[in-house]
Length: 483
Ligand code: ADP
Ligand code: G6P
Image (cartoon, rainbow, N blue to C red; front, side, top):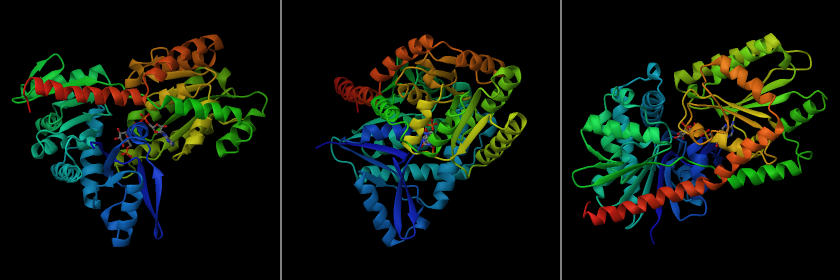
């Protein structure tokens, strides 16, 4: 029987050592949360890194790791701390991540990291091949594994390979600056289908393939000597029903829930003159525009003092990539900004910002989504932004206003949200005022349209479309006797 092999750097679960046992915690990030729903209940295996380095394991723990992963139909790729430094912190997050998000000033290119990136991609390829049976379909994910399709293709020329990029593909002018641009394009073109969140990213990739490799492009197909590679956009959806149902349940037993955030919100509700909640949720990442958001909120409180005591920013940031210097600097900057703004505006009965720096269990996310009148998401660049979709799906009563950066992939499908330029504080401040004062009928009208679209194009449909399109590449290949 054939199966799908999902491959990404992060598995849907991360392992942690707790004395002599292994704990599993769910992974955070759009890729993991999205693909988790595709993986569960399907006949697939997922290959990736467990989150532990080889140095942390002995023979006994290795067995525990294997068992923990097997339970979730996962296969681990063993990585040493040197590999993690070069491949993950180095080339993936110090070179590709900033470059693909247009942060050229943060982009470093180090030959050693590039070498390790190549060897780790080869390690992934070898493990994929060990687990590959005839007629299996391979689905590779994200920027950590750009070379994998070509590496697998070299050993298994006839296998069907799909690749999906979860972050933006930058314009040719930006992409061309990376020294190993040819290797990256060739790596991706080992796939039969290369998918992106938006049409813009797709065009940027095609333009780079044409201009850097001199390849012929027919509509959205790249012509290679003996194969055609299809390139298309598939905007990733969410597990709409999961969020909607959880929010419904949450609303029903709201008063009994005594989670930490709920307690705070309840205390706050008792104030009588309740401040409206403005929600901000992201991984702590410079692409997310968190510092900008704080400055814009400060500007808003300066410009519209009537909202002091009447609105509060609830900011949730999940720790991410804390070994990369830019992330450490950002953490300090945010700590300082939060302290300064709270110091500047706080009153005895009101603090302008509640800041949480940690990962939250699903129930707490739902608490926040359902309790906040406004969601303020201001990434400087973001491939998609699933938080925007999760917020709307959780608004069971259809009330609530989403303010969303035009630099996110999600903004292309969510035109009923209030779309802002994340660099324009004036616009953010005015939009916040507009959102906080928006009549309920208008909120309901906008969210009805948004929910309808999110419900129809959910993560299941996204995966199905991608897999069907990948399946169709087999027919094209046969028709033209290619591969
Ligand atoms: P990215 O993939 O860049 O992290 P997305 O918005 O696409 O951004 O996806 C983020 C995912 O991580 C969402 O599914 C969201 O629910 C989850 N998430 C974000 N912040 C937290 C947090 N503090 N605790 C738990 N999950 C979080
Ligand atoms: C984004 C990326 C994913 C990544 C996730 C979390 O969603 O597209 O590939 O897994 O962020 O980042 P991390 O570095 O912790 O895996």
